[in-house]
Amino acid sequence: MDDALTLLGLMKKAGKLAIGADNAFDAAARGKAKLLITASDASPRVQRQTARAGGETGTPYISLVYTKGALGAALGQNECAAAAITDKGFSESFRKKLGLPEDKAKNSAKPQGGRSKGGNS
Image (tube, rainbow, N blue to C red; front, side, top):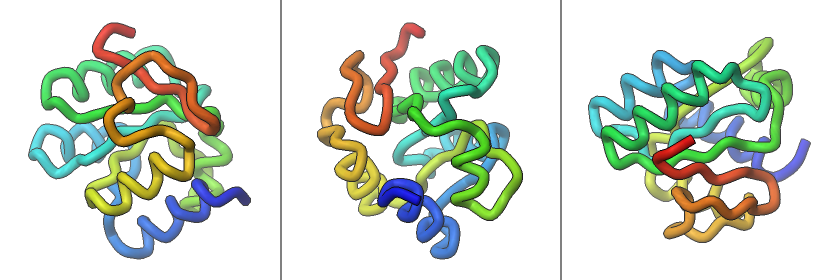
């Protein structure tokens, strides 16, 4: 398992990750989410909802190169299509693990390990 996935598992143990699309969108709506993430094979609906939640709340969001199965395995679940990181420090560390600068989470660059998304996807 790579460093970014290992870090996600640590976030779960620390209680700093809202797992699942509904929980992630709720965390964004409550102002708790620092970064929204989606699996590379998340449904188009989940991708659109993540973009909308990020745009409406000003929460950065990234579509990762990891599949739902890979994310789920890192989190001790079968699959995970979307999640929200709820801690600023963990969010910054995760972006660094992906090679994504803090201020670039909403642009269209494709960093190592993740694909950043803007408000129009």
